[in-house]
Length: 254
Ligand code: PGA
Figure 1 (spheres, rainbow, N blue to C red):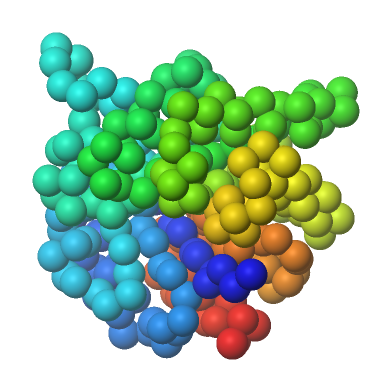
Figure 2 (figure 1 turned 90 degrees about the horizontal axis):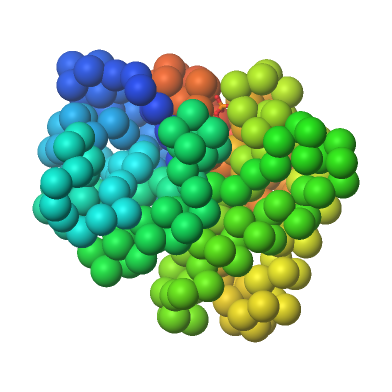
């Protein structure tokens, strides 16, 4: 099954409007691959700035959304508001949200529903902690995160979801998951999707990897079966580093 490679920059809480504009202008100059999907998960305040530059082939989205449609939720941003600024996707369930902001799987499931209603693609992040891996619980944790997040969606909507496997121990640690781990985990997630929702869903859903991806690790990561792309934090902040990762990926996946 041909699933075009997806490269997502997750800027987290970085970049002012000017910095975002400079990044996008430089990216446009050095972007050479038109057969990859390039996505920028931007802070809310720069989404419109990035979209306004209109770089062909680059989609702009958000890093979080409220699980509520509207109401007295000070500081929250709804899916409808994201659609209004033309965000095309949104990260959900990143471990920094689960751990630092105590988001539960149930909230994550609601956020996905809100995004689907608003026509925005959810990128569902799942991942185990170091302790869970040591205890042999990786698959159990991932399958349960996927199940709770997706169980109330229609098959058609599940097919539009993109998963990102992000082991908590690899995020920002400088140590990406090994090729062996990626083979095993991505393969078993795909297998879980097949057993739970059928062959078509397991063929359609992209499974990305996130956690200390750099220009040094990208080639090995995307060479693994069932790795359909990457989500990049730290190394996506510098436009030259990010463009280099795109270039290497594009050459490998011609
Ligand atoms: P990192 O972040 O690339 O800085 O490890 C990845 C992520 O947040 O998924």
